[in-house]
Image (tube, rainbow, N blue to C red):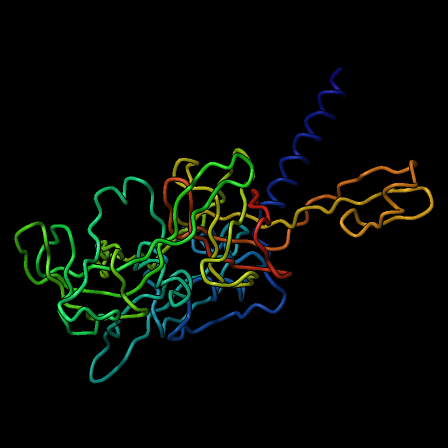
Length: 358
């Protein structure tokens, strides 16, 4: 009996040690011992120099008294790799000048989590509308020149009360998104048309605006929505391994393209009601193909000819396993939909690819 307890204890210890080893951050073989942060770097870029899974970068800074907040890393900072209790950590040494006395060099802006150029347009403008957003929304009436194209600098009039002195986005209703399985309507995409500033209010619920930016021709009926405060746009996302109750889907690219790859922005059918939040990381999986398994030959179901389908009874439809082909990070959420950036892709990503737990 005593021997069985000892064997059980050793087995438990081995399992514990194994789980600790498996949970240890694995570094790349060619990681730099020292790295100097450059302008244009992101936390993701730096972590990719050290980790096979760069989204785990918060653990690279964890329990580090010198870097309490990773977003306070600046160009010129000197990063060195050390180990604490067997875990790799990056520590920062601030640049010091001696002219005429020692002082810490002043910094400008901290580096962001990811390249904001890839997502800034989707952060700075609302692109998905729901029924509440579209209820009683102001819309374009036209101008006094009766021109089809409203010129920059000219007065434009809208139905609705728009506070003077504030900037607004002009949008056009575009595609509606539906859940691939339930067919539920999830939201409607808004095509960004331009920017206008409200100048004054008139009687009869009419607002006067001046157009300051035009991407496309502004038409009567285009809707008007407030622009977010540019100073409050997030630059810092903490990647989180969020667990979904069930798989989601990539519905489309956020831009006009049918295929996607790394750093492209996509729209997925998971949102705040699914407890999805900015920073959440998910795997991208290619759905498994259905194979017709026959005694004499094998073929893919969608490429099988008439003979294969009709004259061979000894066959079985076999669905191949889903294959992980990339990863994405959510950066903006709505109730039923979210914007996400593809952070890794091994193949070309297409609509209807699965969004799964890592």
